Length: 355
Ligand SMILES: *[C@@H]1O[C@H](CO)[C@@H](O)[C@H](O)[C@H]1NC(C)=O
Ligand SMILES: *[C@@H]1O[C@H](CO)[C@@H](O)[C@H](O)[C@H]1NC(C)=O
Ligand SMILES: *[C@@H]1O[C@H](CO)[C@@H](O)[C@H](O)[C@H]1NC(C)=O
Ligand SMILES: *[C@@H]1O[C@H](CO)[C@@H](O)[C@H](O)[C@H]1NC(C)=O
Image (cartoon, rainbow, N blue to C red; front, side, top):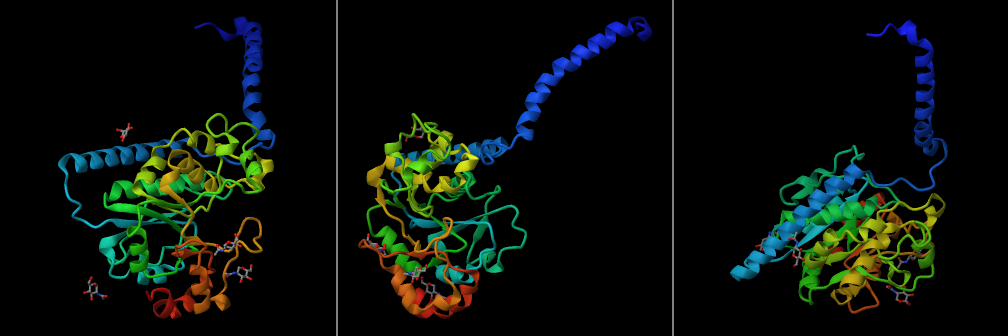
């Protein structure tokens, strides 16, 4: 070992240059933390990695189950089911109403819940009762104005695809959604018609261009030219074929997963664009172009639709909310304040679930 005194001047010069060398990358590392970031938070890459593994399994399982079904020509012995995908960041206030909706139909549906991990209070016990058979799926944090809501919906789709090959429709609902008809009515209206996805697809919304450039000018190119960019309701009922299509997609996700620019926060609703854009590009004829979930945008504030209050809940409201401009009846509606549970339960059997 060299005695340190014999070369103190060389070593201090060495230390100085080492310090200078190191300080350049350190400055680069610190700069983004000292300046406010230009974009809203992005998706952690560990979340992306675990999602990708789940999606791969779902795609493989769907391929092999459809392959074996066709090669063996097995008759479909089991009836198709509806997978209800609850996306929530609060307790499920309307669980008792949903439970009544699902009553005695357990062979025709499955329930999957993606609850924000920060959700501390337990969900109502009715959701985990054997008759309800609700299941939590492994979840990740979600927040407004970020692609995390897309990830959560894709996670629900992938999980439901893997869980039960009988899942034939995948209906996304939230904690503020309620049913507008009986289960039997909903089931018949989905399965008595040609198998198509119910997702709103709008091409001519006035705010569309601002939303298109929410991540920056031209960044969506070449995958998503503006004339292919669509908007629609976040809440949909997809066919199994389209659920696989969504879980399989990586090309558009690469663009839609980018965080919005901070200054574009008010135009950042990725979940209202990703699904309609993807499905309109890949299979427009397989989509009806409208949603089964009624929402009231009159007097909306900061992107929030009208929230119904208990005093508005009357039989006439349910009848009004069912009406649509097409030959279809709406099956679900949002948004309802948690306090609406009591008045809704009072008209559940006599109005909502009576058909
Ligand atoms: C699944 O099947 C589709 C065609 O139906 C094929 O394009 C795709 O590569 C297959 N994926 C896997 C993971 O096997
Ligand atoms: C459940 O459905 C079966 C037939 O599907 C019926 O016989 C039975 O009465 C129903 N039970 C209840 C509690 O509604
Ligand atoms: C929609 O909301 C507005 C208030 O924002 C209300 O006046 C109107 O009655 C609602 N429409 C329906 C069909 O509930
Ligand atoms: C039906 O269409 C009209 C005009 O486009 C619109 O004002 C109305 O809100 C629509 N009604 C429903 C129930 O969607």
